[in-house]
Image 1 (tube, rainbow, N blue to C red):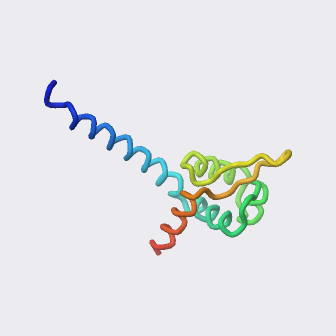
Image 2 (cartoon, rainbow, N blue to C red):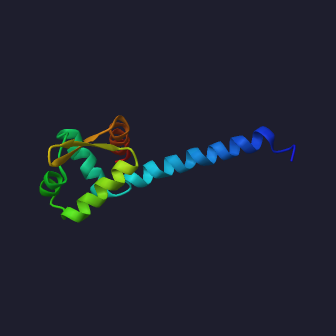
Amino acid sequence: MRGRGMCGSIIIDMAFEYRKAERVVRGFANHNRIKILELLHKEPELSVAAITKRLKLGYENASDHIRKLAIAGLIMKRNSGPSVLHRLTARGESILVFCKTLV
């Protein structure tokens, strides 16, 4: 038991960080999600309906992609009357820059 001490704690903390990184990567691991990030970079504060129309996606499909982006912390939502508007977070902006370096 004595051998675990600090080392065991570090391994647990690292595993937690890996899971956080995995959540972010899974959040943008789809071409349509990257398109949504790019669109929100160009046109911040769009509703699901506006995103659907501009990218020619189905409403449920776009809504699911947006939900996954929000879970990953890449977009934020803001209520505006009956609409919910979406915009990139600082992390979302960074991920978009990263994605552009890949191709």
